[in-house]
Image 1 (cartoon, rainbow, N blue to C red):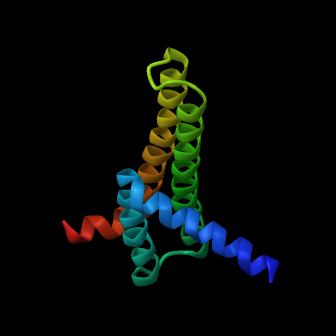
Image 2 (image 1 turned 90 degrees about the horizontal axis):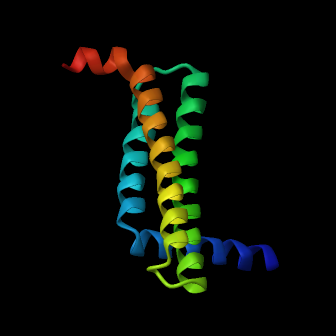
Image 3 (image 1 turned 30 degrees about the horizontal axis):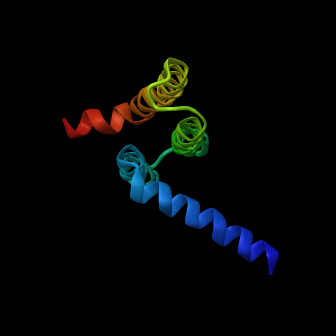
Length: 117
């Protein structure tokens, strides 16, 4: 019973992030597109695994970014320069991971994308 309650709390947390964070909603839409390509395209297993890992990395990092922002705001005023720096660094980490995920996806999907163009 406890595991069901913990799972429920985790799902509620994800729902809250989805409802309150526009960037997370955008990333979920991008994840749906990538996962759809995994289903529709004849990719090698390692390509599928790599794309799933990249999608998960971006989504997990965005949730962590949201957590850190909320904690920073709770502990220090929004105008504190250190809070701004921490938020900017975390946003940079999300950006770096997202760009890497896009590059990996393009590299894997290039042949399929080229036939569509």
